[in-house]
Length: 241
Length: 353
Image (cartoon, rainbow over all chains, first blue to last red; front, side, top):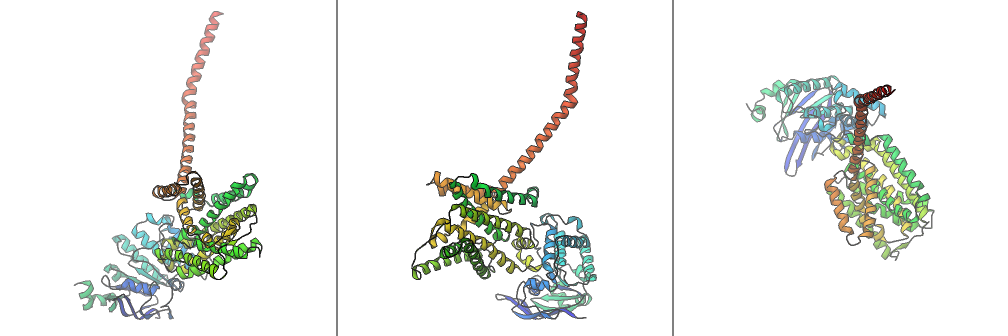
């Protein structure tokens, strides 16, 4: 197993608030890793640091062995990391199709993609995700579950090796939840490593190989779902038993 | 949805672009000289509004640097006047504006929202005052005289510039860069994370749009004949393109053109007819348009067009209803009635005989 993503001593403060406090973590090739923790634990901040949206105050992020700490989001994207957002950030005045096409055209700078070819590939992506019939819908008319799924399609269009999923399961119905879990397993089968933030405990327990628990910006526990559930500190702080 | 699907048809846009260019090209054949002069001014505003919309329309970055980018063209033209042929001057002015916009873009496009607006406006004031200082302290001139090649030549230049701006903006909107700009306008974070180099695209398009502003400035300098920093860098030229674009509607190519044309015509009409109430009436019109037509005048045109289409369909349908009724109800009745009368007459005639 090789380390695909590695964070070494990551810290970030917003003014006086230390959102992430010297956190060390890693994600291995082909893994599904969950990141859990109470609200305000610094999970999304960590994702923003990893994806390049904000620069950490100190520490280093390595992706595929390369230092990406000071890179811009688009450069990190071109190196094979894609993400979704906690509050969906779609291009709402475009159709679903156009959202994905834009990601396809700009997420693969090493390839020159023609108009026809792009259309074919976008349709393929929608077909794989079971959204083919919704591809011409305006984003505004889509349900939350569909929007979250569309964000994953858009992220996939950039041909990532690693996908950061920020609460893709929150606010979904039971049926949609099961679909989501299946989807995440499918993505792993396609060779995509997944790092996900989630609050829905049974979903994350069912799908993850390893779980990292965050509290006040630092890692307090790490292990397989079974180990994390038994951990006394995690129980005290987060699971509340 | 309906409105945009009717009007975003590529063929329709291309036809309209070509039609407007042809009309403008043949205008000197039948239009009186004063109309040509008025058209030059209108074309100036159209070019400025179009090139402003090129960048600010999709991205929602309201740039107030138009006056600076235009003024630099004006000043380059005034300085180089007579030493070079006009076409070379226009190209050089465009390039200088491009370089200036590149610099402004690199400095400001990290800024967002109101900071960007204020910075671009500040840059305009800075350049105006710097040149004024240079003129009064170093070259010891207040203004400059510019020789004019004649209104017909100026008009030709403006039509060519208009065509180039329109064709460029059309190609841009249909390219991947155009889509990326729209993405940036809708959600810059998302655009960055799907691999769009947002800063690069913003700076490049901003700089490209400045070429047309600078070139238009170079031509207009020869139209005005005498310029000084206050004419060249008139701050109103920063605001007018914004107002005109909003007035017309920024969401399609036709909007800014319509806005600029109607706005300029309205301005000229009000200034001559109601010189004292001019500003008041202008402001009132703007307020009404912004309040009741948030999509600009274009919405009105489109609503009108759709109304016409619907009316046409309605009349067609009513005509069909009438004809079928005639065929199925009235014609049998009438023919029956006629037959009855014929029989009666025949009977009557027969009896007489």
